[in-house]
Length: 470
Image (cartoon, rainbow, N blue to C red; front, side):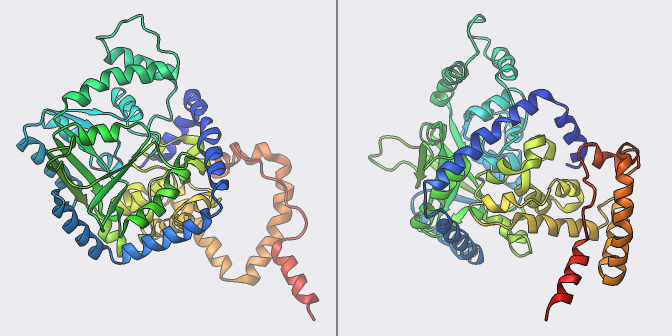
């Protein structure tokens, strides 16, 4: 998963991607701001939601046990998976025993984490993504570029060839120009998949311990169809999704849609509690819930446990200037943006993804908009410290940080160095083109304008202010 810088350069040079990314501020950011302004108690809800998730994580074993008991009482079968391989094996065993050939799958980031699609195909099953964005990237054999809008990086011009190549049974002269054209075509294909699927697989936004219910939010209704039409419903979710009560779930749901898409609530907010009962008009004959750990128990016990509060709204991605410049694929993994910079090293080890923790300007916008109050910049900074400790940074960077740290521990020398450096820098900036050719400065100054120092240093002003005190 390393190689962020190379992927970022490729993304910056892609005009179609850059055009698509310019839609993010006009869409997600503006809508979230409007939705937040319309809810006076938004900040209070953030505090309540963050506190209840912290309490739940502190007592995760208790609430998980309660959830399992209530889910099984409702007729669901609950399975635990310690890692991604075990999760895939459990799902495939369930489907094989039921004689499943066609799977209708709802959007699920956990299934991306386990690479379930590939595992199902290797097992000889047809798997069809039913979320429109996921369906598009499945046709293009790509990974999601955003945890809420997986195909946000694509234009209609890029999507059209994939539709025409895959949907050969449709007229070749059909029009594929407007959004409605693509939606109508996908609907015509997926309707038959829903009708004939043997099993449906979905994720879960929340797990409610009080009732043993799984909660799923969508805007397309594909989650409901994948859950209720096939005879088997499999829910794949990670263990930190549990919340104690229905009331707690509604607190988070009030934040989730507003933070993700700027809606008061998603078009479909569905609660599933067990399989079909006698007298029910629809629903699956079997319901299975696969709970995935995959390192989360270790994260919970360490300094990065706050990331397990994440509700996957994508607000941190939408407001991140780095994500807005390079898109999700540059991060090289399942989880991009600020939340990915914290979660990916926690799941895979900093040695495999050390370069993505530098993809942060420390502007703090992610923490400002996170509905769960996760201190993302602080956690990213901690990962940078860990990368330095494990020698996962370049020798030049290590040397520079060591020199700066040494100076910072010697205030008088630091002040002297600043007094010498400021005039020199002011003088050197007269020849900016020459500075851009110096190794170590060339890449930085190619995209930035460094203004000359003005006036005294902060240290000098601070000392002068202290001398004036009575």
